[in-house]
Image (cartoon, rainbow, N blue to C red; front, side, top):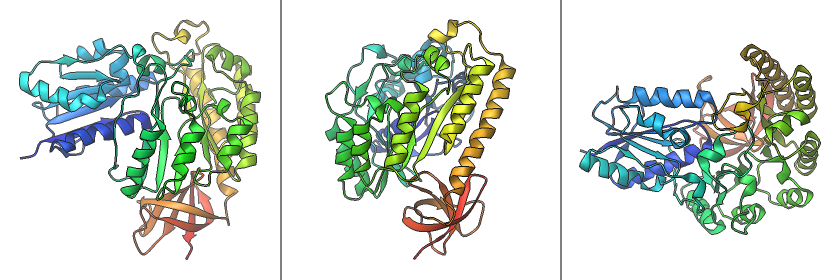
Length: 434
């Protein structure tokens, strides 16, 4: 009888990619993938540590897992395992700890554990790692778009961020390897790829290659119809880069530019490498080059020392940019970062109040962006049947608008023209054309 493996992924799209690559390892050795709530022989938790909430979710999942099958093997991998291996090792249910390196060898580690039943802590010093760890993904269960990891690590060391300690320094995948995997994904029927990494804007700085050269070669692949990029630094969008990018027809009109704060004083304490003026220039370049481009972002509230006046500056700047969507989150202390020891930590109730105000504002700018598309025709990559309305399917435009439309046949995985009629609660509804 075939053994079963179940994987729980917490955190970002980089983790999603790595989990799928690990799943493939086990399936190549005869394992069957099952849902994480089902009984399995091997459970793998891919952890997150970007906030204290990520740590807590990781610990909760670890402690809960063996209640499903107490005789299973439990592997804990990822960022939380990397920065806090001693904490993870103290949890008696854990059999193997593997961090953010050596992911290509998880199956071998499990096989060794099953042979000798000896607990393993395989976390290594990630700060000295200089090579990109090659993994391979050719399919994503239940997905119509594929994730392609092109980069790992970060050299920026923002004062609040633990990720450089969890992921190490920048390491770029070669253009050749990235293109080859994209071709395999196209052969498996994926027409949209999402490029992810810890700091995509730094792609190629360690290898002498460039992001625009990679994008140009990906644009030439038959079968790939859309290229979407993950989180980007605003400093990437020079005049030259933006103009070259605008000549690649498969690039999605969706740009996630990390902001964090709309106040220059706060950005300086955060050790961000741009000002609000730099950010706005990038936004203007993008909007000039890409009609109806969606600018989305992440914004932190309650960073140490953030005064009421500084927060008001953020509110004003966010309103000026008018984001298509924004992820608002409250600052949380990460051990070992510069911000941990900064004075004037902001009270939780102040963070909560600021978060609510900023969410209300960005919901308004989102609705404004969506409403500007009423009566327009957009191409939609349909993903699945829409649960809220029978006979309807949902998908995304290339500028990341969620669209639902009625269809008598299953249109999942297909790109269809849709005329948008109205929007409600962040979702557009329209009619499939043709």
